[in-house]
Each structure stands twice: as structure tokens, then as C-alpha cells.
Image (cartoon, rainbow, N blue to C red; front, side):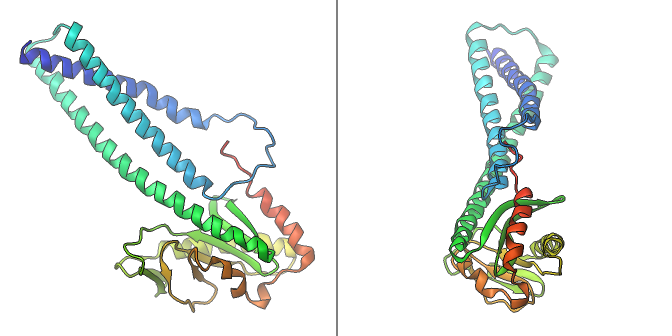
Length: 287
């Protein structure tokens, strides 16, 4: 068995793996979009980190597909090694091997990117779940927590609604380098002590609060302000003095109702109707 035979086996094995990927990837992309009428369509609500877990599952499927492609390629190479015979020669064999090498490099690059993406998505899902668990303790104070609420094209991570007011919570998931890591609001930005500044989360959570405020005001039949809240799990948060905006983590989330203002409080007769309206915005459409 010469070099020509080895190159032929490698090339054909890579092409076989690429062909299997081309056949399988469209099926994996289309299958989640198929929707059949679920049981209890209006009674199943989103759990915390529902959207983040869905994105994580999609990333895992891509990793499974890349692993499947590698296994098919290795199996094809072994079959060709023992039973195949070179069918191409000369410049065609060189061209085929060159294309196979480019495909192999692309596979490695995509695999590395997907692994990094999977790691980030897993952290985001766990950070969202931690905040959901922390906010769930507010039930003891008469507050109800909704997760994954859709308001038009906007998705709100968590909504806290009860006698002490309504809060729209957006989770900002960033890895903390040490336990003393601090985040604060400064100049309309989130400033982390590792030197990172983020401005988008503030604009996003304020937009969520405004849109939700219109719904709450229609239910209450008078203007009510929804407080925008940024949650940064894992980081220590500095005290905030920036108007309506609040900043918290998983440790002080239980103090959220105590930061409400008298003007934000809801009347008892409005709470039940508001909860029913918010439930309809949190119906699970994923499964």
C-alpha cells in the first residue's frame, strides 16, 4: 500500500463524511420547526432559562452532528483501507486530496467554534436558572414570577408582579474572574471591574419595561411604571442611584420588592387580572 492509496482513502472518507453531513444538517434544521398541536396548549408556561436551554440544545445537536460526521469519516477510511482500490490518479487525485484537506480544516474550525459556543451557552443557561431560582423565593412575599415572557418581538427573561409593583428583569451572564468581582452602573453603562463596559443591556431592559408598562397600565386603567432590573449573577453589585433602573444579583434578589416605590404598588383587585394577562404572554411554544 503506497502513498497514493492512503491519499485516496483519506480523500474518499472525508467526502463520505461531508456528504452525510449535507444530508443530515437540513433534517436537523427543519425538524425543530415542525409544529404539531400540543396537549394543553394554553396551560403550559415557560420555566426559567427555557429559551437559554433551547439554544443550548440546538448547539449540542450541532456538536452531535459534527461528531457523527467524524465517526462516519473514520469508518469510511477503515473500509477503504481494507477493501478499497484507488480509482483516480494523477492531478485528479491531488485535487481531491486538497479539497479533502480543506474540508477537514473546516470541520476542525467549526468544531472548535461550536465547543466555545456551547460553553458560553451553558454558562448563560445556568446563570438564568440561578436568577430564576432566586426570584422564585419572592412568592413568600406575595410576588409572582413569570419567565420567558414575549411582548411583541421582545423577550423578557423574568417578570416579577405583585402588590409591590411590576419588575422586568434582564439577566446579564458574564463569567466572574474572582469572588470579589464588582459591577456597577456608570454613565449609562454596566462597568465591570475587569475593564468591560456594556451599554446594550440597559437599553434592552428599559425597552422591555416600557412595553410591559403599557400592558400593565391598560389592565390597571391608570399609568403604572414597570421598574427595569439588570441581574448579574455571580458578581458583587454596587448600590444604584439611577432613577428607575435597579441592579442586583442572585444573593440580594429577595430584596427586590423592598426597593419599590408607593406609586408602583398595585391594588388588590388589579393583581388577579394582571396575572391572568401575563400568563397568556408566557405560554410555552417550544414543545
